[in-house]
Amino acid sequence: MQLVHGRKRELAVADVFAQLEKFKGYQWLHIIDLDAAMGKGNNNALVTTLCRRARRNYRMRVRVGGGVRTVRRAKELTRAGATQVIVGSAAFREGKLNERFLRALAKAIAKRRIVVALDTYRGKIATHGWRKSLALHPQEVMTALEPLCGAFLCTDVDREGTLSGANLKYFAALRAATKHPIIAAGGIKTRSEIAALETMGMDAAVGMAMYKNKLR
Image (tube, rainbow, N blue to C red):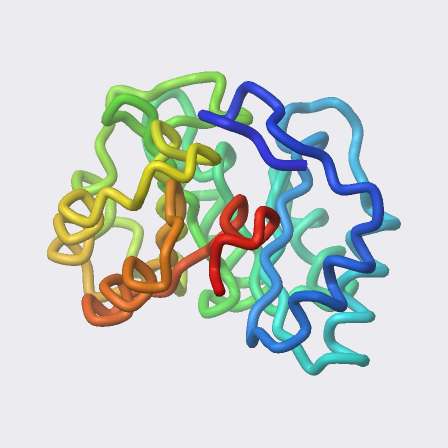
């Protein structure tokens, strides 16, 4: 399923395994369990199957997120085949960094496997399925988070699912704030934007443009 601005459903893909076959030429598979992220159950069995097929059949590395709020959940995902685990809401507590949780997570699965999601809606970090906002900006917390994770996933929720084009100026500002790897997402619609992000030293997580065959 693909959301617009993290709220409106734009499309739903019935056969996810056909999509996996379609994406087999890429190095990374990016999976977000939206039900788990929004506290509406989970898709554990499907996520596990996708991880195993991606790794076994296509030699893809897999990045998984959505509802990762405990060390146990993160360990389950790594056992299922996730190369990296994305942590969003649980990286914060009472409006501040949840350093205790992140340290425990790094001890359990290794820092290099942790990706902290710093998704922003109207300029502020958004959590809980992008339904809540914190009084924090990504650039304010990146330095403190660097010892606790291996990379950042930065989704521009204002443009997520819109095919309106990546906000390259915004991503450049994020790039200047940290030396950690960054995966950029939100609004990406052309190969030239992906190339521009690569020039900045950033990866691109692409959704809608792939599903609607915009990248030729």
